[in-house]
Image (cartoon, rainbow, N blue to C red; front, side, top):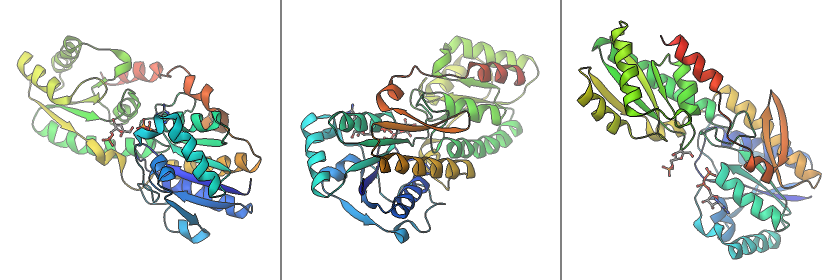
Length: 319
Ligand code: ADP
Ligand code: F6P
């Protein structure tokens, strides 16, 4: 392969730029040329192409967001739009594509591969919801962002003898809540994987108070319910002082952590080395500290992973 394309798609994640930088420079060093495609799959349909050079990716390793912009493109679900995208990429001389995004973006990548256009997926999403890889780009940074907020909220919660519900992102996945909850010493972690009822949560918070905790942090994954709804329930049902905070899109921004930068660089480097050997339809990931790749379809079909051991541990150490 002599010419490849690269795009970012779906929700942005800190570290996407580091992956773009690594992929562009690895490809150029291997004698391949690179086309940057703006705004995800929409950018292929709009022919939003730009030639990437060594200096196009200078000064971005430390920047959050994505210099290629990102988008959600509903048309790309249609087979005829995927055919149109392949035709437009071929007309530009693009022979293979790197897609940096989450599971939705990977479904688009799989569709292109099934139609004979070699595509490699790099997992870029703060949610960490792709089962085939231990970690996705952006997850580590997003957890650190949550942690900073949790630490601040704990200061004011303890001054006021208050329990504060902190709602974090993750879509249907509880990993941001679980990891930031453990690191932030949360009293209660509520995630979709554990299916707690409101009365279970009430029981836990009342027990914490009876055991002598005068304040605490309740981490709530957005996939369970809204923080406001839970706050109103607990205010009604208990005599405790309860507040709620939704961390929102700040979790998606900011300078990537060392871990996300290194991971993104490894993924970008590995993805290009696959395309260089004309290998497509692969999803790049990390498993037990080793960079791996597997069939995109297999990667998408893997059953959801959930670190129940970590959840169990969190409940013990928060007593
Ligand atoms: P993420 O990649 O972060 O999970 P989305 O689920 O919003 O984000 O998907 C990003 C984009 O990927 C969508 O807007 C669409 O362009 C494309 N996509 C998602 N699902 C499919 C699918 N089943 N077939 C083709 N393209 C898809
Ligand atoms: O997939 C990443 C994510 O940030 C989720 O955690 C969240 O549910 C969603 O995207 C928010 O999407 P939007 O950018 O449309 O607000």
